[in-house]
Length: 188
Ligand SMILES: [Zn+2]
Image 1: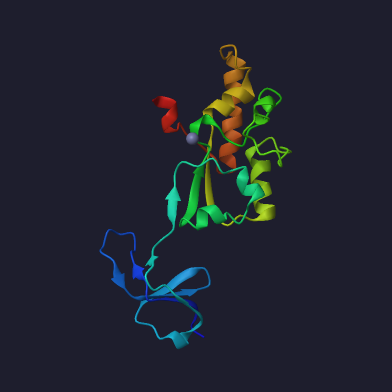
Image 2 (image 1 turned 135 degrees about the horizontal axis):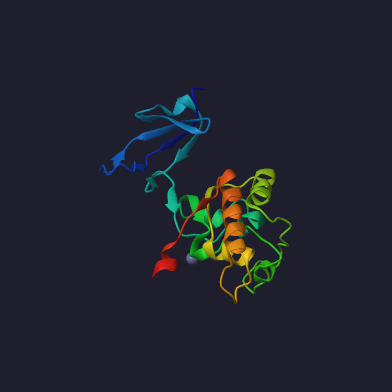
């Protein structure tokens, strides 16, 4: 067979701003191999998308699912909405870094009880994703509130050493791909 999958009879919206059009989409491996008029005999499996839209995955830029993806790595609730990429670490909160200064925040009522945080850094946290595998792409901001909490106790201003500690933690997170960022809620 030339292709692994064909998606037939759907309305293709390609994300470029063009109007929808009817065509068959062919997949080989993890990539779109062709879009056009393709015979069903050229693929191992044919998916009938009659009445459905075939589109690139959506990006959800405001997620808090980083911990829950450990519990539900298949991410069905995201994929069933068409979401294939999420941005986490919003609202100043992120899964790391964790220190003895902010560990008590982890155990707030909304933290999933199934998860005991045995990581402290983004490097350790991302290792969990890699060992288990997750079904969506994820990008992580380093939560500014989490950095502050990890670097000093919340009820007092930052001392210089706290700021240095926070900068060190951000740099460590960046090495592993997490990105410093201020989400919209922080500047309202
Ligand atoms: Zn939020």
